[in-house]
Amino acid sequence: MAVIIDESCITCDACLQNCPVNAIVDDMSNPTGESRYYVHQEKCIECVGVFENPQCAAICPSIGCITWDMPFTKEFEEHFLNEEVYKPESPSFREKKYRKDISLSMRGIKKEVQEEPKCG
Ligand code: SF4
Ligand code: SF4
Image 1 (cartoon, rainbow, N blue to C red):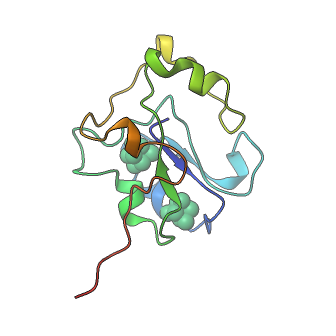
Image 2 (tube, rainbow, N blue to C red):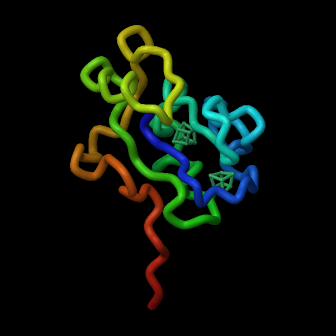
Image 3 (cartoon, rainbow, N blue to C red):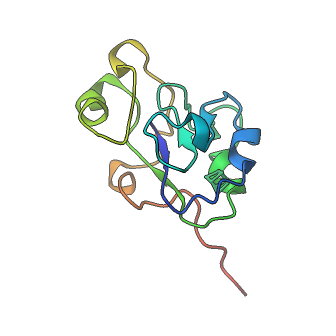
């Protein structure tokens, strides 16, 4: 999916309004049935070519709510097809752009896209 929204989502709608590819749906349309917004991984392009960083995370008021996931490519197909939190289409026929400068070690549960602003 590239990025994922966790349970700290406060359903403020900011990310949905700013996603350049309409990859985000609200809690009412979340295919997992959870009361949080949801990123359709088969649509997310990590904002490559549009914004410098994922715009959803940049604008989200809930720090740490949006985290990295694996690139949505054939290489990681098993990851997406075996994970309960996704309702994906197979990456094998719908690969998406991703940020190659983000290492795999930075991707995964609780790897924040948006870092807490540093003071001073
Ligand atoms: S990273 Fe960009 S393309 Fe992906 S869901 Fe967020 S705003 Fe949309
Ligand atoms: S911007 Fe953050 S808190 Fe607001 S709906 Fe999106 S994920 Fe949830």
